[in-house]
Image (cartoon, rainbow over all chains, first blue to last red; front, side):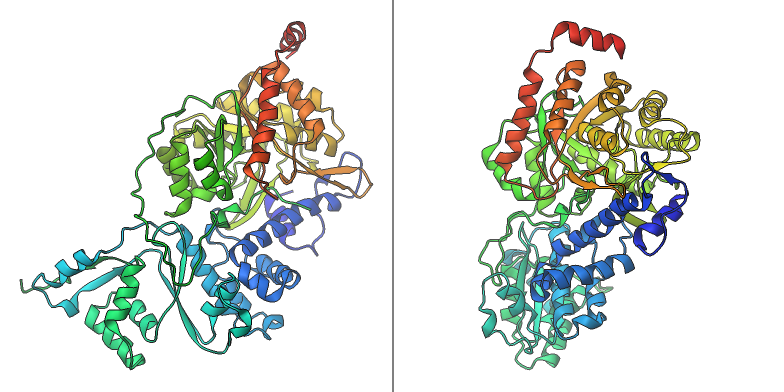
Length: 257
Length: 329
């Protein structure tokens, strides 16, 4: 018996029990191998279920576990650290035909994965208004300043009301009042110990993504205004700063001092 | 059926969730090595401990239960930041720590994963655990991690490989590790020695210690029709650095014989408590962990089981019996 044969049999229940396995009482070794087959698949389904509780509530436990059992066999973990297992679950859900009647399921999975990533992301101190003020008055073009986002930040853009749906499953919003067809964008971050999910106002998602890509303040604001005519820079900056979403200001390097 | 490894790394410690939370942004933690007030490197105290679960973080810090140590799964803390490090750092200031790996795959055919060893080394430097332990098992093959502790044949080739891997781990981490006897469900035709002889050889050749999981002894002995007391008696008990106790689930094999599953999802069985008392009679008080990874109850229930273990440790061993057993082993 090689570990390759054993490993292959673990994820493929249709394969016979590998050769070279015996049992003390002569019973069929397949029934005992089944313990490991079940350990692998059910523990990985549990891991997925822990990361995607709202997806599970949306489709029910039975459907969810059946869907996850297909996922874990097709996408077993490639890391010994399971913290980020399920990073490709949303994409899998998008393509999972039986889930098609719930068109927002994949995006809710994206939101929940962003929460998992935020939970374990690096810690960083928040940018204070004083630090920002100092940078603005430092004699450089304020529009060229680069605002650095917290390491835990993700933006999830959706054609569906993913923030409201998620919030309804936290008991914060009445689910019957949610219209899933309204587009919403989420900002997910963990400025302290707790993961926050914020609904972003129009243009703000584009703005934060531009900051993450290293754009200066003026360029990021222009991109956001191009997408949403009512983009309100000061309002969005205040929202981001009040939640610790920004950590520092970088003055771009210039050849002319 | 149940499973061995816990999904708790995905759990939030009592999450406070809100859309537009008014919860103030806390100052993020600077990542500095924890300066423990207790128990760095000198081995775990001969008391009972429990597994540290995210859902108990706040309870532990508030109640500060009188317990010998906490144990964590190393892999759950191989993340950049966030509440896991925040709470483990604080709890470590008050309790000795046992770092228990579940992903090193010491029994694998492939070499030890050096990147994983680096991650372990960083955790050990940061938290200075009193003990580091891993399993006689494999869990990865190629790129795939199976999240299960898989069995190895007990033959010369495997023995040499496991010894090489333990040597490498101890060399890289610059400390002794403990190796845990497994729960097994299958045996291999290739095996040429029994499990106790295999473990004894690994321990003698590498200088590692034994993490004696008494539940695994019971599970494996029932699953393979062996005598648990004889198995325990043939282990090098003088090398035990920690004991594990846990609960199992009961199933049956294709012939209807009992097949016990190492589930960590229920209280310790009376049969395991009995074996534990027999071990203590030979070893004296030992650092003893109550393992619970599934259907985790409140902290109080875990502490009650830990207290039972501690009570058993304080029962004076009957001198003649203990002397006899020592002489025999």
